[in-house]
Image (cartoon, rainbow, N blue to C red; front, side):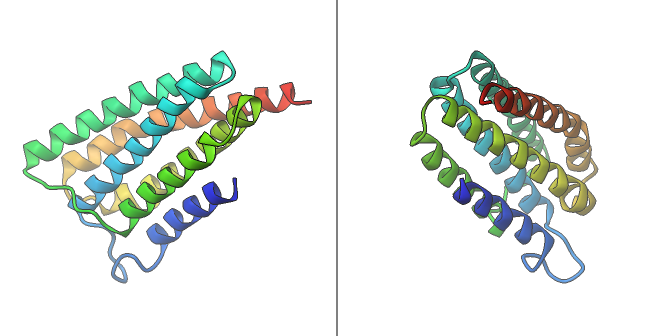
Length: 177
């Protein structure tokens, strides 16, 4: 569990501090890489939850993450092709990828309710972190209007995912008592 939160903290620190030149944010190609990576991390975790989830609610939530985040990645990929932008790997996208891999490794060791709890706890933290990054760095830094519009358009889905994950978290906490 500590590994999961360490990876997320690293992601937030990279976005908030020295990864970008003083007073500037990520470029549009860097934002594209961050968006695609953030979605892929949640798709991969959703696939694991769909298979390893103990409760039907966790399995359904995993499928929702696969479906929704795949759709966002499809839209993002179509947009970068249209704009002739090549996503540019950067410290944040690499941190997200590494954190996603560490999260999957930690989750694979868990079973039953412990898996469900760890997965859902991560989803709450992850979606809050992504929303914070969208609001404070990614949307304000986007120079291309269509890229910015895509992030603004998908933001409500991240809010919905966060609320859904929080509701699942409460349900799991209650059932553990």
